[in-house]
Image 1 (cartoon, protein in one colour):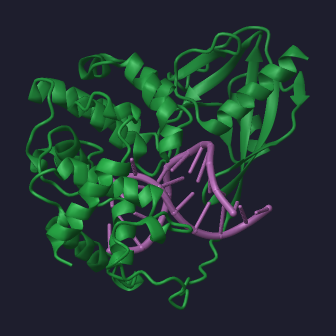
Image 2 (image 1 turned 180 degrees about the horizontal axis):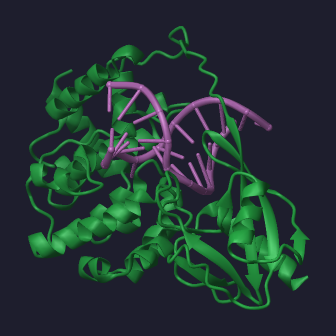
Length: 348
DNA sequence: TACGCGTGGTC
DNA sequence: TGACCAAGCGT
């Protein structure tokens, strides 16, 4: 099949069955498309929708986003994961305001230089909001191409494989209606050519698609090793407040707020001594578990009630978090779980 | 360049 | 029910 026939089939299909009413398809400005594309990275549409709506209603312009405190952004982002995206969002908003007068550049070279924007997101901004002819190579497109051309996944030369896909999609993407084509590919990938049980019988490409089910099912059974990790959290409560610190120089959840975190009980005791807190009035709390993709987290908690708010001089980035009137800061999902639990036992 | 980054959905 | 995936990017 010729490339133009491929793209025409997709565009025709899009007119009939494509999604046209997603929240970010109402006003397709570069700002709206950008926010949605960043949120949708490695995240499902269904998950994104409520976050997107809240985000846009809070930061209705890029100007407002650029002027906002990072904690406000992380507050809205809390629970969505990959928090670096929110931090890069803030950085890029400032660059767009200061360097580009509030609008995204039309040059893909310039777009890719912006924090958090790679080839795919840049292509999405240019095609979906401006209707320029640029390809997108996201998970949906990769899956369709891999099946259609029956490309073997060569794990040893992953880069080569990626380059091949970029080349193909570059050839297939039409000059006109690239917006409809790109949207159609993503819709087809998620609605028809999905990972499990693709609906080949209603796929517009099924006459020429080389996808064969069970081609030896070479699923290299790579059993992922799930590591187990234990974090010890020190919970210092004063009336309705608990003490949280901003995570700095951490690999995960950087800039979000968290209880003081330790590797063992001994380090907690050392910390308490250093900060002249008497280790009494401590309460036994059940451990809480949290599953990450590659780590099983066990969170052991050590709770201390204090009668006077103290300032722990070592860390400037701290906050007394009111359980009944939470401040606007970023909180990871496991810490959110703990906070909910603390509120519950506080009320009991 | 391969790996780390979060969370929820799906079976 | 644990394994795998979801509109990728930065390092």
